[in-house]
Image 1 (cartoon, rainbow, N blue to C red):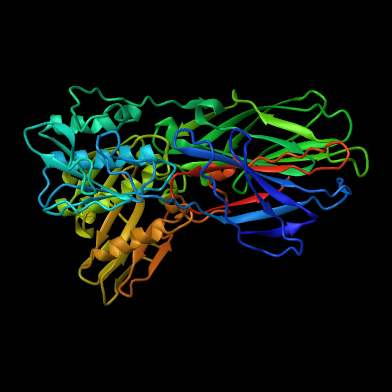
Image 2 (image 1 turned 30 degrees about the vertical axis):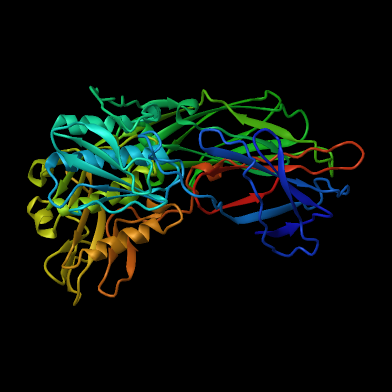
Length: 564
């Protein structure tokens, strides 16, 4: 949809690919109405499974300066659709295409400890492979593996004596990937999916002969280049650059604060007025007046209450030219320096609850299951957490008794009695078929006259615990996960410390003890990377306002606002 049009006359929006090739134009409605549009982007350059598009406003309005309302419009409800029959995979390298809706990993009705470990490792690795696309990856415990579908791939994990990765029924719609082996030989086969090395397996079968753990080294200081933080803007009036970093990249577990040392270069301001204000959430970290030096060097501390797994930074830039009603090309260019750095302080002195996930689980954490059939719930939690971090999660399947007294983060699929016996105090404690205890203020015991399925994040023994439990009906846990999956940023949109579905199948997100709400703050990610610029051509003034969009090979929604 194109709409929210402001001060655009005889305009259009050109859509270009990464080469600058025009793929098509969208007329701007003259009556400022909102209308749908459709564009064939199949000729766009595709690099590493992505097509990078630019949306550019072109307008013949010559009477525009910094005293007038800047031309702007919004493009919303973006989605991509794909046509043509799917290719039936004939080799291991072809089995996982760049566009999928779901991957099903089957471990059989009574999976061994080795199969459980291999399945959760595979969930973590494949989620990272498809990130930032939110491909759903589930683990099933069917006696016979489900049948593949056009946009659903099935992987069958078999604990037997013959190690390897093979495409069964290769070149047909029933093609299925089989991963087999016993003990460490089965776990070793999963290493084929660590990165793009899978693309080398261009035959129907392959075997991983040896593998060595890729231990992630923790660090308390990383540069913006290492964290992938970038930002640049041409400023006239007020412009905000959004940046942010993935705390999991430090591989240090939970952190209590972060010090930002920000370096930047900008056009020296000889006349006029310019300043920058840096904030994280509702906290102002620093302010500075920009002068004719052209360089910025300031520091600020992000307090515990603003710490989440993805920490957002907003740089509010202000530039007012000395000349009244200056032309639009009188702008200050501001660019972040990649040598800027973030230094974190490890610790649990933060809000706790869901905001510290998956940060508190990176890279290693324990997984304890009451029963092998509950592995599907652990898989959903890992899939959602891994979508939110650039670090490959490394779950370790163990028993609840061994994990209970550890200081390592714990993902537990168990009942409330086991949590209570271990001395843990979750926000909700299931006590029976319909009774729950609420460990808040006040502490209460409730009879809900029906079952409850809960997902809880809390702190115990100075480490993070993600507990999944139900009273009677475990399908309510699936409903709780569906609620999280339906949120705009999925796991990153959850606040508080409890997501629970009651007997009426309504899901609620609560804050009982930890992870309370905070001021709205966009999650860093692809949507933070919209940059705009404005130029004036000779003769007739041409307004050029561009926004960058990464179209991934998946049907998904997005919204951009093309404003200078």
